[in-house]
Length: 346
Length: 246
Image (tube, rainbow over all chains, first blue to last red; front, side, top):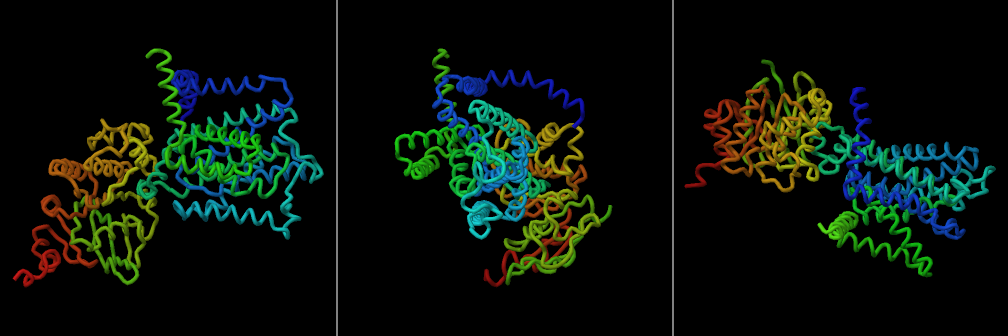
């Protein structure tokens, strides 16, 4: 791109932001961001900060994860049923580098994410010959293999077995992002905002249009001279990077990694669940879905019915697919907009 | 005026079925050729083999001297062959403009479109097929005739030298066919080599100066429409042997 064009684009950003903030969804987003910024300071209560608030952090971590899945499946059309792979590999790598190699957190996280990207390539390249449900099964198979591999007792010395890595498994402590829950919250919050901006820009760009064309008609994209394999690999790499970031944050959130917790099919299921509730292709719907399910789980646990969490989640997924297959984010925004118009007497 | 497409002994077997059998022909740059034959003759298979969507069992295909036999479709497109499909396909959730922008972003398409930008270039292509006022609409709600035009617009996005049109008149009304004929004639006048299959013989035979006929995967005739139309084997293939009507 010519230098003049780039400078022009950068100069246009403030105008662009202003016109975006004037739209209903834009101002709604700004409003929610402001609330999320001020919310942590609502109370000085210890239980609030160290328990309740941390669920927001957790929801934001899963927002990034679900958005990465939506980018791969909803935008690029590559159905992934094994997204836990990237989440788990990044978390394990990050935990290992901190606990056993003494890496500082700010280095271990990108390293973990890049490890997830590497895995994205290893898995992506054979899987790319598969389409649709076969790709879904292929990714699912890979995630199950990985899960078993990490659980196998015989590989415990390399892969840490079913115990995984905890706070003091290695010579260095596996700490949280910060001992201060507020700082932890804002690190994740800022990463969330930056990640979503990047993903949105990619989706809106010509590159994103090409990904969508592969989703809508791969043969047609081929016939349009597009090297679909290369773009699918790119989609896998971008998606696995952000899934990896989320995976690293999750490892640090729990100060531990273990096979079922980080590679389990439940994690892959969460990505599908959260993105689907919000709405495939919307990207922002993923955060709606993440917050919804994290807090639903929280409520169910507080109510003492945690045994039924997965069952209830599965039922909700069936209901979403049956009654709101495009997700609930857009209908909600439409209704809010109408309500707002009525309020203002339009 | 050199040879732009050279097909030699092209054969395609699907298990026990030989869809294309030792098929050979040549097309020169700037030609306007039709490919006819009854249903199941193998016309679309020939197109699939040339454009890379099927791999030949044997035989060679040369485009502008380059051996493109068995190459991946997108590579063949970037050498300069574009095709449309018998069953209309589109990027159904993208706007018409985006549909055309995608081929403009191919390696070959970019060479031409980067001067004015992909959007401008795609817009001008839509204008040339008469769809520019529907640029922001997704293909889902468009009538069949417009979708066929869209396919041609997408093919043009890659700046092709050879355009393969697979049954472009299929499902069109009389008016839509007339518009399409004008468009195809104009493309040919602009220098695009056109190779077209057809079933609606009346249109095709009056449009093209040369026709290749095939039946059951085999070459039957090659020449001006009037000549080929009188070919005995072809008539039998389409109409059956005379004594069936006795």
